[in-house]
Image 1 (cartoon, one colour):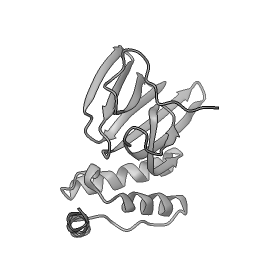
Image 2: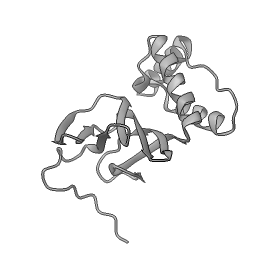
Image 3: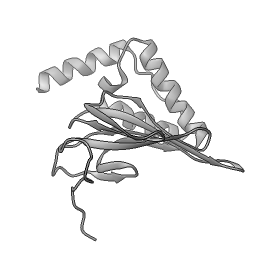
Length: 166
């Protein structure tokens, strides 16, 4: 199977990582939890598409149910990649992205959402959090352990380290 980086006609600008969003109340709900998109477009009343510039970190939440209850609960924290860069295919994300965190099951997804809420309560934009922290959070939640808190001091250390590496 050959993987091409072609986008459908009428989509967003080339070079962006695009995410297809769906919202059918209480049936299929895909949304962006954080991250600043460069572009967006409404496809129809239930579908939209947003695009992220390379290097942008964002979170996508996907939830779906049927007559018997929840069938999908997932959060992915991703970093958009440049054209031609290696990436992992992720459903509804084109061409793909670098996966920083990938959690499923509502109990675990809610723990990630709570961690994001705490980060925001500390005055830190989750899109600016150290990518290594998302891996830490992924591993600890997967192992049913308590993750370390990401607060202002940890964030200041990350921004200083990032500025020294630039």
